[in-house]
Length: 315
Image: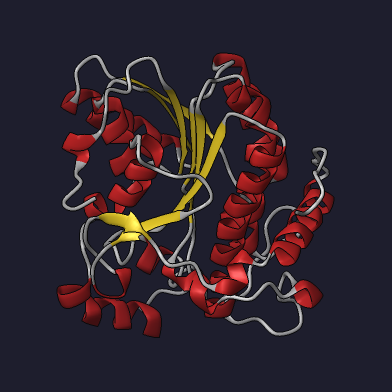
């Protein structure tokens, strides 16, 4: 897919897309591009003020754009349930669900409303719960897609089942890597379930490479008033290795719209170490493809959220 851009997005007229975390960064760029291609876009995020601003910006760029906002806090299972109920009522059919929102490398351990470590809770468990609650609506569409945003950081991750929420020994970076590994393994397991159940569903992961967004500063500064080492390192790398949020959104948009996008894979940039460039099929480390670990993570997630679907046997 050399030099694939937003101009290559097929018409999305008639499609309904739900995107989390789309008030800035990659999510915003994806929402803007999908609305520009004719999709009805539902932006699900925490900040209602920013949501209103984003709706106005997209409508200004694309007169007649069909975009709406739904309040959603992925760090609260109650908020996820309420948002899913509202979304399901307004969109009985969901053609595209993009699990995009995330937070990175919070320096000190924080918990979600439900007692989960914040990165695991907001990046992964909240998206697991949202997908499960919207799955009936997703399956009501023909050729529906679920795109889950992971990260290059998945390569350094392990699922620490003995201390999933880092209560014994918290590491900001390791916790982030685990959460993004979990999002990728979720996408792969959802693909395996879809194929086993013969669902007309494509489950695909994407990662943005190194895209300049608020992610590099929001998480690392949570609870602090100055830049930490991770933010400073990122700033030093930006001139050589990074690309824009619009560039970082391309793998997500390719996975979401291209007729050539496959299920059960991940897309990312084609440049050095997959940090920037045009979207291509990305490397997935062997650990992430371990079916037994993926199944165990899914089952633990069902227990944590109280949401369950019938599971086929592991092939």
